Length: 65
Ligand code: SF4
Ligand code: SF4
View 1: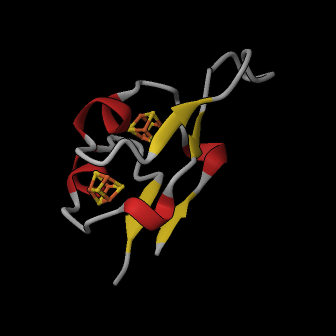
View 2: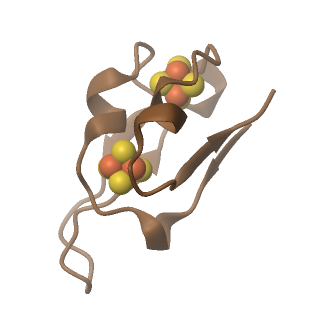
């Protein structure tokens, strides 16, 4: 299970780049806080490597088995 706290995301794209299963995609457009945020698009493809959770500087992603 991927718990994504959208309001904490600053659109750095680290999760997008490190995810080996292409779980994330970028939202269309920029949010009102000025960030282009992520979408958890293919949660079912997650292999629980934890990279996104470990590397998200804003603690916006938590991965639970
Ligand atoms: S790593 Fe965190 S802050 Fe960066 S885009 Fe992903 S969810 Fe957002
Ligand atoms: S735990 Fe690994 S496979 Fe799952 S979403 Fe995060 S980076 Fe992708």
